[in-house]
Length: 498
Image 1 (cartoon, one colour):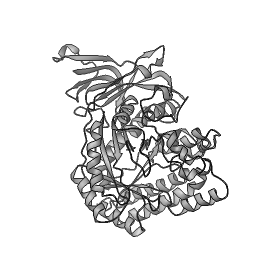
Image 2 (cartoon, one colour):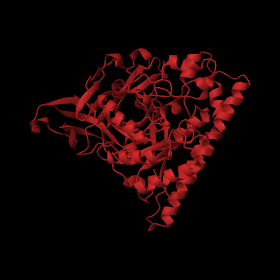
Image 3 (cartoon, helix red, strand yellow):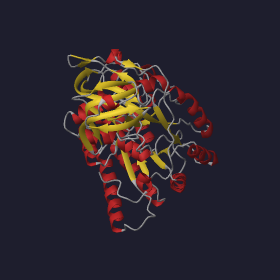
Image 4 (cartoon, one colour):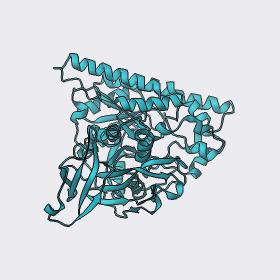
């Protein structure tokens, strides 16, 4: 059935206006001020959007749905995880193909293509690279042939996920540049962290409060600086994942400014591929490391992720970096471990599995804590939660925007609706909610994916009836292919300017 959205406040990353949108066959076919229903020949449904924001569906560029770790598998599978995403206003995810050292990454990719078919929403993948050998290179080339244009390495987790040498990293960056794909890097120093972890544990610090102490901001900052140096040496663009602190923001912004200056001074030079993009997670925008000091182990351990939560000044610096365009995207790093799994580290913080569930709350929290509080505008919100990810990873303008011809992935936000986040209401399969008890204002009340309404939440007396919201039971998601040498990433224009 076709859909006519009437009188909504339509928001893209660069504009805001009141208008109508007509959706047919999964696409946006008309945008106008007063679309007359009498001129529509097909059967259609009218949604009155007056006073509500109509935005591009959210794109979460960093998830670990159904990930199998060294010991445990996370709580969500592809169905439950993407259902939760849809309820929260996300219509596309980019998930990391899980690969452990010694595994054949090509086999891992083929397996992930099968399990992801249960997805409720559209999806794509980032390849993972934990070894640097022929199998890894073959897997990346296989991923490229399957429509994947990004891959990830770790400067942390030595002997588990980290490449063996800086020579390997340099060759990896060089390989990415030659093949036109975007490398993503987890930046923490893999040598310093285990040293600090053991030092803290041996001195008697065994609780979750030791976790942020074992991964201080300088551990992240030094890794970011080294990562940028290696990427520049290889003349390769780079995307730094889950940035957390003011020190790192300063390093990235200085590098971005230098790139822009060089591009302006050498505007005819087209061989410079080096470029820097950055993301942050919704968790680092909401909480500080005080969470890890809670006397309730489940609360403290539930908030353990890496890099860890930081100080209030760092949290505020992230919001300001989003405002300036230094950080391009808000992601989740959704990793829904259970409390039972985290309790493995009850007496040893080093054994607490790192990661938190947040795929369901990202869009709501970013609006409530960002737009509602005046830290970012609706346009900046759309850029950070959808459009920039679409541009960086090669979906745009198919996704990430409201334009004629774009996929009808649309979210309707009621700016006046409220709800209290609780585990009892969530669709995510995790047995806790990191954001338990937070009241939010500005709720995604309708999610449209490829022209189908897959989530609709009634609002009564200003309260979103979230638990009773309609959500699809259909695995209707499609894998979205992306091209190499994405112009937004690989051109020498000044993409780091807001």
